Length: 73
Ligand SMILES: [Zn+2]
Image 1 (tube, protein in one colour):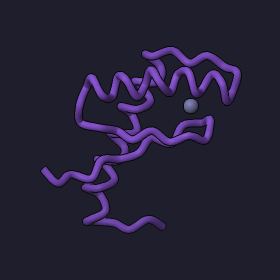
Image 2: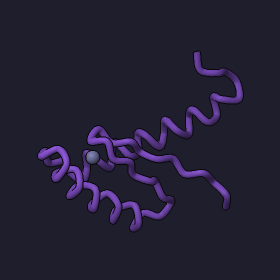
Image 3: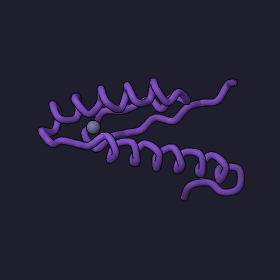
């Protein structure tokens, strides 16, 4: 189990480490909702942030498999 976990870079400038543990991830997401509100003054919903984190995870996984074949221009 030596998988490098990706980091979600939020629009507010903070980064969120993506962990392979659902309850830890939920905690991190909820904690970030509070941080995000403090930083931007804008409320983000848990569903919104979760979807963004999942999209980021998919991107990271997709990129990793692509890196074997192509390099970024
Ligand atoms: Zn944020």
